[in-house]
Length: 269
Image (cartoon, rainbow, N blue to C red):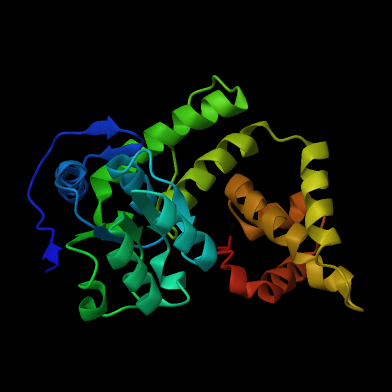
């Protein structure tokens, strides 16, 4: 039988082995994880990429090997040689039927992540408990806690002591904690980047992208779009920007029209 996790309202915020909890759903997930540590049953953790599935699995089975399901032979060997195994990305498994048979034969305890590919009836053969982690878009209280954690991590890793300016910071939750961490690091890097660093980044990017017969025009937007955006933020109007750039106003309007897909939001003045 699969048991679904029911959310309850909890307001406590704690940090447990990197699984940060502030929202009711993440706190409840952690409560279930604590129960699983002592129950000894198999469980599967569902959720989008970056929601904390693997972190929670590690908390439940801290000493178990973590095997990506796409490495099927390695996974079968681990089930044969270990009492506990974490199966990461169950959707990638090549042969679910054989996997189920191996788990039933070896009686290895399993915590898996993923599994959206399979029906409840298929998963019910090996997993007693189903634990669902909502996306960060549904866990707003967790976002602020994660930003704070990533700020401290980035500050330590990059050796920066300056405070993190949250003015205008809109969390990127497209890949949940993965995109959020990347955004925080990028924010810190942008504050300290110099001209040489910027050119090196562009050189690396272009080296791997160039190859057409019209590369100059193809990549010109990489210079023009940020230049126009930055200029509008600073000078506030097309007229001011055209004067500062030394461009005819009609030329600037044409460039804005050429890059319409980037939503430059230029206002008339």
